[in-house]
Length: 183
Image 1 (tube, rainbow, N blue to C red):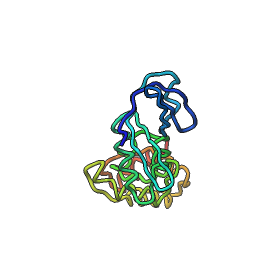
Image 2 (image 1 turned 45 degrees about the vertical axis):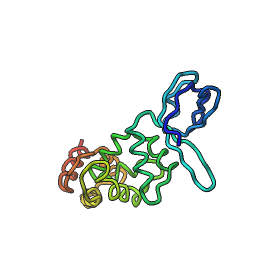
Image 3 (image 1 turned 90 degrees about the vertical axis):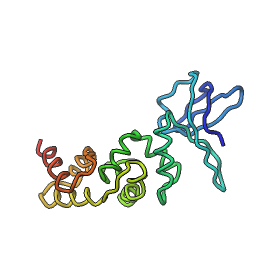
Image 4 (image 1 turned 60 degrees about the vertical axis):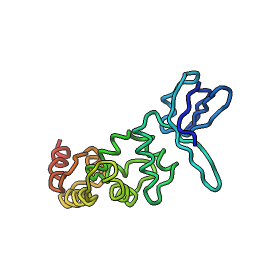
């Protein structure tokens, strides 16, 4: 297994880097290819993905990003490409915070993550990534309460995606959201 690469960046495209490691070119799928400059020396952690019909490397700037990726691909229905696409729109710390605070609304903003997948991520990973357990229904309950108060769905989703409060109750989330919605 290839666990890291150290070499010179040869090329960058939409989602891949091509890295020259002593004359051998490796293509590596990454979450933020725009962060890299052609010609730069780099060290990148990698995870090798072997499927029946394809093999590829996924690269990471640091171990935190790699650990979140490895956790995400354990979630039912969440493959490596979906996981790296989701990470391309956020940071590992934001994902962990959203999981810790049961924030389904935030996770739904990530590419390829719907309501069911967001709830599944929280159920499967809350203890693993945050050391706590929780109920993803907290944000669903808060959404329903805010909707019954007459707020629009898009506004509620926007505000709930900004709230990352670990161990918050539905009431706590509604209180915080009301403060943000009334501004």
